[in-house]
Image 1 (cartoon, rainbow, N blue to C red):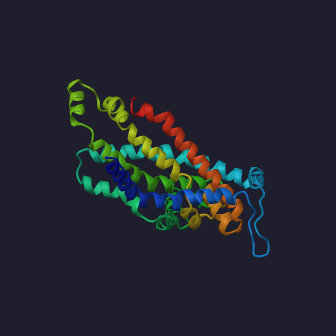
Image 2 (cartoon, one colour):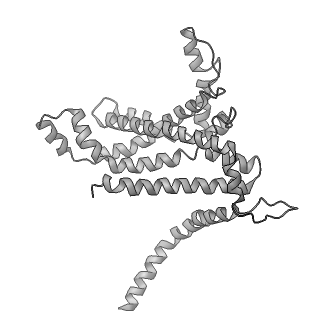
Image 3 (tube, rainbow, N blue to C red):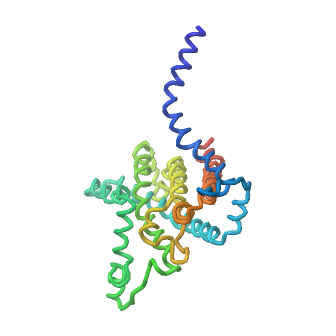
Length: 293
């Protein structure tokens, strides 16, 4: 019998090995390598990398651009996460009902999700371009003037937030739609027999049962709010005056424009730590309540 158990364990590890190898090679090893690189200077052909300990982190704490980027990312997350989730729920409830051309409506809501980021950025340039953009054309019909939406520090981040909501709400809608279709129809029938209104039924029954899906969507939305690069590269390059620069774009800029790999590694470690803390906190604080344990 011990040989049988050994064969079972070996067979199990062989099944896990391909996924484990990929996980270690493309997740754990790069994370450890980035952490190590953040403790050194950036090496050159004439000057090898030197160990500096936490000096790069001290430089980061004194970097005004870093703090501005962090502030931008916080406002970006606050503006995109709750709004995109709320719109996704509304769209899912709407397309889950019996309405004409329901399949066409679902496809229309989901279409922005499958578009590449570069294509999305170019589409929205048609809206935001001064004078000839659709927004300025509509404003001019009511006597308004032209405005450089992406060139104004007061409006550029809001414009990026609108684009993100437009693209992500349809993606989150798919998860909510699947969750709504898995709910037992007897619950709604019982609520109608008891005279419950649609809003009361949604608030007391549907929404609580959607909370596991909301946790999953929330984690994805938080991660997405820290990984925007493509749209910024096409639309604003992080400007004007870093008003639209987000953390991951700043990392890209430091690594590939300023060629400071050590400082980029430092920023990456901070980003990974922030995402890890947020994800763990969401599971610890919300998971038990969501699943009613």
